[in-house]
Length: 474
Image 1 (cartoon, one colour):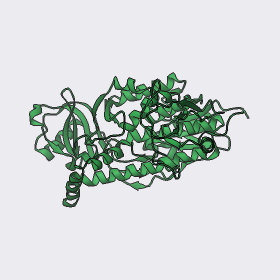
Image 2 (image 1 turned 30 degrees about the vertical axis):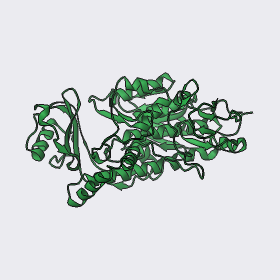
Image 3 (image 1 turned 180 degrees about the horizontal axis):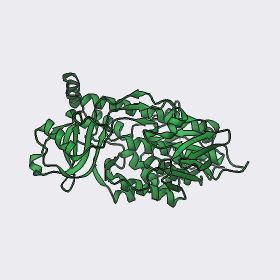
Image 4 (image 1 turned 45 degrees about the horizontal axis):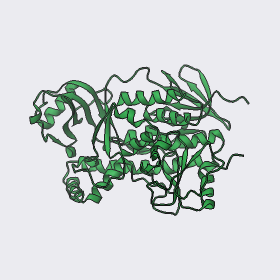
């Protein structure tokens, strides 16, 4: 049988799809990305990249480009909007949040994927597909058929790929809708100090010159099928605050609910799900985009390994095994945060108690690192605490650790000078550096920066190299 023209078809070129395409291209995988939209979004919504996503962007040499277009903010106040100082001891070289316009982020990530050789087709959607033992035949909305070895649905909360695949999406439907937008106001800033409260789902916060983020309950706006208008915002502000603050000139307006759902499976045969296609939750804490991007970094090298022929059979299954529990935890913390936004006496009592506990630095830091995803530890079996965690960007010979990960390969960071990853030059780089700022003899890093092995024994290392990167090449 002839080889299909593409190795992977990706449905959706949002941040998740674009990052996945770039990760696959680092391993010379032939990628076609199908994007429904024909033009960038007309509105300019500011999204946030948290510490872990910033680290991943640094690993691929993308962070400096993003920083040029974003605005740094302190890494504090994420959890349920409880305002506390930035905790001490954040374990990251990038201990901040980066606000960046969503169309700019999508454009930069798509350009990166294209520069690496991905094909992106706008105005194209998946209408159907059939998979067999050798690949997937994808039918486009216009009737065209495309053949690939794998299909990945990164096509959002209403994912066509997920629905066609028949994967269940259980969870809770939306109970409370909220209006969110960015606009100018007609009153002096001094009159807005302290306006609103997160537990009422109502606030006005400055996000730029004369521009404010406005959040207000949508209970009085009955038609959920229509996008909200500026008049809807004025109506709800008057109902909640007694004034509409003279809001005008909106940049973007949206409505969101607190629906919370998790796909029953992330993979069926040669079809996989990532990003919002696999999980949705309220935007509390700004975790959704980050969760999807981190899915892509986890999946990309594993799927590439299967396509290139070196990955062990179980490697691709670790994508769901690792990422689905992470998503479940995010759903739980957003559920908790939404409960704390209730004006009922019980949730408010819990909110006050939690605010007291967050005066302890360790509690504050734990919750910030939970939102920022730097506290994740994958289950790689028994071993040191570092095993399964990501390694921060440390000093190594000639520069920084993350600069050594731009090519999307694994890395053996060896302070002993006695170890080797021989036979895998296309998969694992080796840095012998006795000066590395590391408390252990050596670590094996996966392409996503997580520690796959810790120690100094070559035979033990060989076993782990085979587990994660396959057998040596002949």
